[in-house]
Amino acid sequence: MKIALVEYGAGNLPSVERALARLGVESHRASTPEALSLCDALILPGVGHFGALMRSLAERSLVKPLRDAVASGVPLLGICLGLQAMFASSDEAIGDAGLALFPQKVSALPPTSRLPHMGWNQLRLVRHSALLEGVPQDTYFYFAHSYAALDAGEAGVALCDHSAPFVAVLEQKNIFATQFHPEKSGPAGAQVLSNFVRRAGSKQ
Amino acid sequence: MSLAHRIIPCLDTDGERVVKGVQFVNLRDAGDPAALAARYNIEGADELVVLDIAASRDHRPTFLETIRRVAAELAIPLTAGGGIATVDEGRAILRAGADKLTVNTAAIRHPELITALAAEFGSQAVVLAIDAKRVGDHWEAFVRGGSAPTGLNAVAWAQQGVESGAGEILVTSMDRDGMRSGFDCALTAAISSVVNVPVIASGGADTPETFLEVFREGRADAALAASIFHDRIQGLGELKRYLGENSISVRQTG
Image 1 (cartoon, one colour):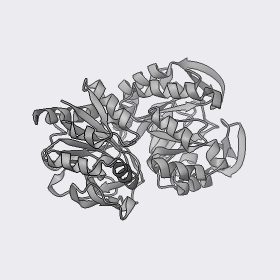
Image 2 (cartoon, chains in turn brown, orange):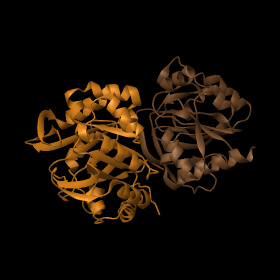
Image 3 (spheres, each protein chain N blue to C red):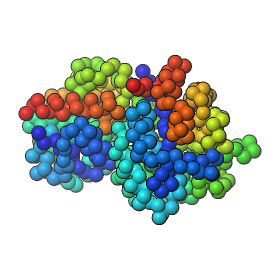
């Protein structure tokens, strides 16, 4: 199985690569439409700014190929800003369109708690989650963000609370995403990545 | 369910080695950075900080190599800094494997550096490190490894740093550094009460009780320590169990 990390300059790409390597999973980087179209599974890493991410994808002509890959059933895992990019828009970059795999928008977390939401937090499972299989309840995951999807309809399978409830794990058919960083979340994060890889492999 | 208080071991590096001093001087060797990182990753550290205390241009390639070696051992976040004065230097440190940067001396001289780094990498990647010393009735920020006073009130500087775009404050009490006399809870609380970003307390770590104090009275979101972990005076698991038993939310591991 060919797993590709979408390469557009995301800072956390090497960490995701290392985390996969620790699981014995080989991955490569895809930075062109052709490379994307040859993959069996895709991972969209991300840290930083929503607008910057969407512009980087557009400059590399990766927006449509990404959407096409998802439409054709290729499993996609979005991480942190990679989750946020799946929505139609974000308060962080008014006027910039996201990948719009989900019609909702990404919002600024209310400043009633310290922001950024930085550190280890627990999840609230609201539906069955393939990514969280084998992960004990109350497990902590590492977050670092100030924006979040407050609503993703049925696709929001696990929530987290920090000044407002927000989507921590997103799953719909072949689309998967986490607001936390599995590559930085110790053994629990490794389990989540492993679950995605197994799930992606079983779709072949 | 709530955000866990973080326990953060800190590696002060000089060249290829971890060093540790008392009140910023009398440095001694404390081990290999990658070996210590591997140990803390397994023992349940919530994050790791690596600071280049020499912070000279000549040492920069060595420091980047240290970051690469440390990052390779970690499945937890890594913060790195020491002498960062430009966006390009920050980028090099992030590319080497760090998730967050600390800025200190250069940010005091040019606060717009914080804004530029935050615009480029996001506020979540920019940690403002402040070395503070008690002077009369307030705390003053010092730079250049604690050797030069700035005349700036440390609490006001923290506030200004956050307004400029810092996503986290790492405050080190120079009076307590390496003294094992407890964190400066008054300093940490003073900063914590004026900013809405997470605050990491540093300097003075000793017994588990000192951590409990800095989370309760100091209102810290995270606590950083070096020698008590390097020298195995305090185990991370044991410390977290103690804090958990005292109703501090922590991520228990193992």
